Amino acid sequence: MEIHVDNQELREAVDQIMIDQGYLPMEDALGKRIGLDEFIKKYCPQHGKDWVKENIIYKYHPDWCKNANPGRGRSFEINEYRARQWMEDHWDEL
Image (tube, rainbow, N blue to C red; front, top):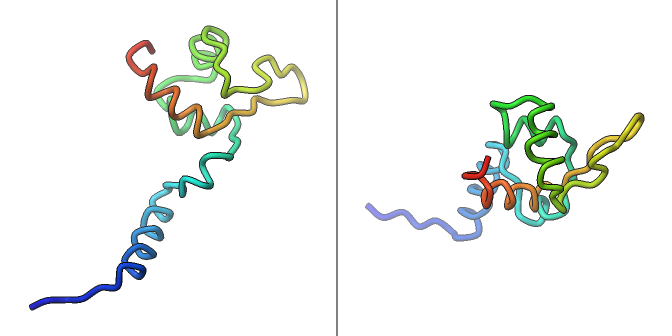
C-alpha cells in the first residue's frame, strides 16, 4: 500500500507539531528577546538566578545580554537566538 502526501501539507503539519512542542520557527527566534527568568527556565533550569548572573552574565559579559546591570525598574534583555548558540558553544565551561 502506498500513500501519497503532498510535501506542502506535510511541511505544514510538521511545523504545527514543532510549534505545539514549544519550538520556534527560525525567523521568530532570531529576533526574539526574553528576560532572565525565561532564559533560566529554558537553558539553565538546574540553576538559580544568582548563579546565572554570577557565573554567566557577570563573568563572561556576553554580547547577547543587554542591561547586564539593570538596577531598579529595568530588566535584563536577552537575544534568545544568540544566547542559545552561546550556551551550546560554552556548555563544557559551565
